[in-house]
Structure formats: C-alpha cells, structure tokens
Length: 102
Image (tube, rainbow, N blue to C red; front, side, top):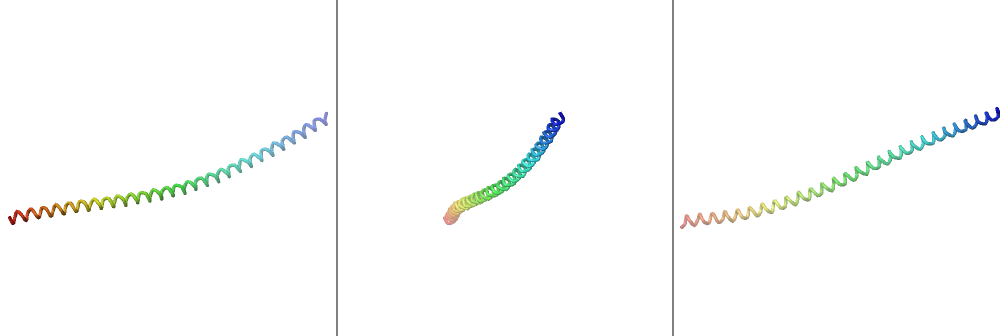
C-alpha cells in the first residue's frame, strides 16, 4: 500500500506542476493579449487622429472656397447696384438740368 500512496503523491505533485505551468502560460497569454490590444488601440487612435486632421483640412479648404465664392458674388452684386445707382443718378441729374434749363 505505501507504494500506491507514493504513486498517488507523485501524481498529485505532477498535477500541481501541470496546473502551475498552465497558470503561468495563461498569465503570459493574457499579458501578451493586453500588450497587443494596447498596441492596436494606440495604432487605431493615431489613425483616427490622422483621419480627423485630413477631414479638418478638407473642410477648411471647402469653407475657404465657399467664402471666396460668396465674396465674388457679393462683389458682382455690388457692381450691379453701383451701375444701377449711377444710371439713376445720371437720369436724376438730367431731369434736374432739364427742369432748370427749361
């Protein structure tokens, strides 16, 4: 019987070693997964920053184009109003001169 007990004890020791090795391996796997996920998160964050900056630049260029278009349109309208005012002024002067002359 003592031989059998020794075999059982040796089996228990082997089982404990296997459990400890499995625990260490699982901890290494978990640590590696954490590091990989942190790396992935960091990379994703950097990509998002780059994409956000590109979108910001695109929107800035579009807004500058729109501002230029609005400025050009305002200048065109201003010229049109000036021309109409000049014609009206010339007509008014002509009417006043005709009234005065005769």
